[in-house]
Amino acid sequence: MNHQRAHILLTIIVAGLMFAPLSLNSGMRAQQASSRQELGDVASIDLPPRMTLSKPEPMSLDFKVFYVLLGDELLLGLYFGNAPSFEYDGAEVTRIDGCTALSNAQTVSAAKSRDVLFAIENANQYPQKLHAFYRELNSDEARLADAAIASIVFLKGHDCFKGDPVK
Image (cartoon, rainbow, N blue to C red; front, side, top):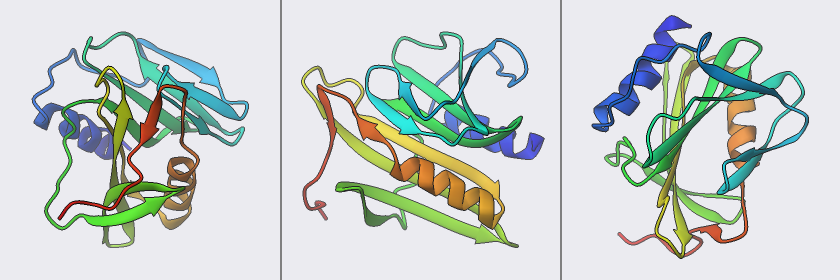
């Protein structure tokens, strides 16, 4: 899974965001998932008992990244901020629980990767984007990650864009 972690870190670094090196085994707080877990004050996510939600200690004032772990393996990353590293070329419009989102999915040698981008509507303009991403998962893990993405609910004062996409 070191290769998978490297892809996620590269995704964040490519966005031009700089932070200290990240290790999933040190400097992180893990909460035992019970069911619905809060993602800061913006959204919440439903996680089965064998999944945990971790996030690095404060990384930056202008973005947050949460990680969903399956056991001790990285399953899903969730970036909240205004400058996601999302590949718009080839992205398809999708609806997830009433939200309009962009999705890029790839399968290479049975390994599944996906990026989903939600636009967030709120009064203070932060955060404007939720970028959910996973890399090189098997089919069962990808289904779990997709179910977690589909379970995201935005909290009071925040909502996802629900209109028709602008082409």
